[in-house]
Amino acid sequence: MIQHIWLFIAAELIFSATPGPAVLLIGACGLRGGFGDAIRANLGIQTANAIYIVVAALGLGTLIAASAAAFAAIKIAGAAYLIFLGARTLWRAGAPQPATPALRGSPYRLAVLTQLANPKAVLFFGAFLPQFLNPHASLVPQYAVMFGIIVAGETLILGLYGWLASRGRQVMGTALWRERISGAALIAIGALFAATQRP
Image (cartoon, rainbow, N blue to C red; front, side, top):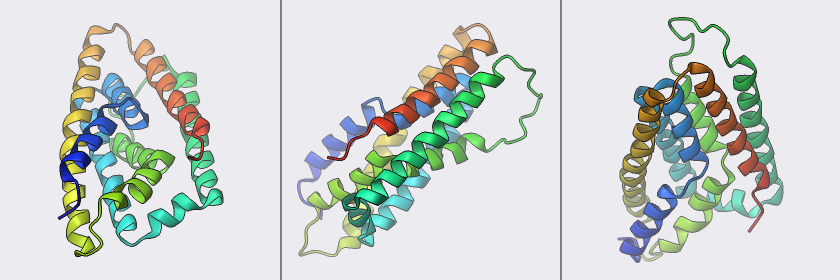
């Protein structure tokens, strides 16, 4: 069993509830496309987390977190991509939208890419999780328990953020403002990535 499991659970819940790239993205998707889009984005976040947990279990996460070049590349690529998406959303705000979106799975894909490009996620999985490992026990079951805790906590918390954002979508007036807020949120996420400093 992992060491200090209750401390890990508390820390995970705090990290999940703290507004950051994942929260902003879920909120933007819920505001723009409703609760269904927020759920798809939530699944995308958890898919990226699954990839990270496998990478961390293989010991590569610590390597990436320790490499200044890898960290900088991830940060710059993630920031540039999200700022581009946000700017494009703002540019297209108010333009006629097709009745059926061409990319129905886009919230999921955007969430996967966002979480994979998140430097804080690299540090969380590569540097934070290993602190709770019991080196005298098998690592795979410990990572499995951690992943279960992460999925349970984040799915509920991000789901709540998505639901609140979708309710705001119903209250808010026009699609124009939803597009503007979504675009601004994506740019804010990119700015967060760009401002992230190495610990």
